Length: 365
Ligand code: GN1
Ligand code: MG
Image (cartoon, rainbow, N blue to C red; front, side, top):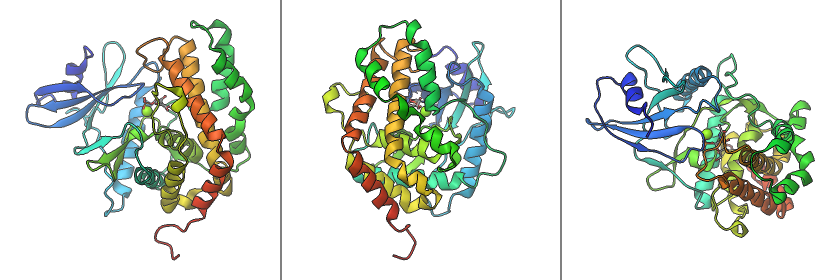
């Protein structure tokens, strides 16, 4: 429990009595609690990680614009829900504690829950369709573009450069397997940035972190009700989101696997995510995006593996860790996923082309 929890809650809802506070979710960056009031109201209390988000006021401003836009542009019949940012009686949407960390209170979406990992192709398809809907709605976000809350996020060449600069001064011993794995794939880190510079792939507002655990499911675990964790919603590439969603959804054992030999990139989930996505948002994709779908899943796994490994070397200053080696293990899981994906690469590319060739839902067959 953080010393400022109660004070932060009282800033937003001074007249409500807090009955309980319990940690919520498994975020690696921010701290999150479920706050329940004596009257039975349920809220999400969050402390933004000051070491990750340099300017929380930008995060909050984006969050207000995005939630408002999603709410007003959702088709009426849609079951998708958007949480609300709770303002204090004086109109504050964020509060800074005396240590400099920013807090906020959000409405809790009752009756839904996050999956640890995708369990079946129906869930994978539902996630793909929800991401497609999210991208479609964000494509009409009015100008100006959202602020860049996290400069360099998903800039793979930059992560590589930072890793290479830090290698010789790290505070943890190097792991030869990770070092060699990265070195052998060094050129691949430039793939999306180069395609972006050539204008071949779609740039628009994206989620930034659409991992499986950020999609909230209905209690029967079949329908996606919401996509949460909007701190990294900002200008980016559709392939950043598709790559991240695929690397997470196609890893049925999750990011904290004990036995590395069991890590597998699940082809059936890859196909299902893309079928769901294309049924909703295929019109957003350029031929260059479709060509790089499998490659982006590979690159974002590689990038996340490198981010975990770099953070292990730096002493786990970014991703929360229970022991010094946890980020090293997480890196190895991502690299295992890359290896499994590479062994099926041709089939995955064919599956991506087939999914993108299907008619849009609502279009005549
Ligand atoms: C972080 O905080 P969380 O768990 O939502 C990270 C993502 C990673 C993810 C891996 C701002 O997300 O980029 O993919 O961990 N978020 C940030 O679990 O760095
Ligand atoms: Mg996140």
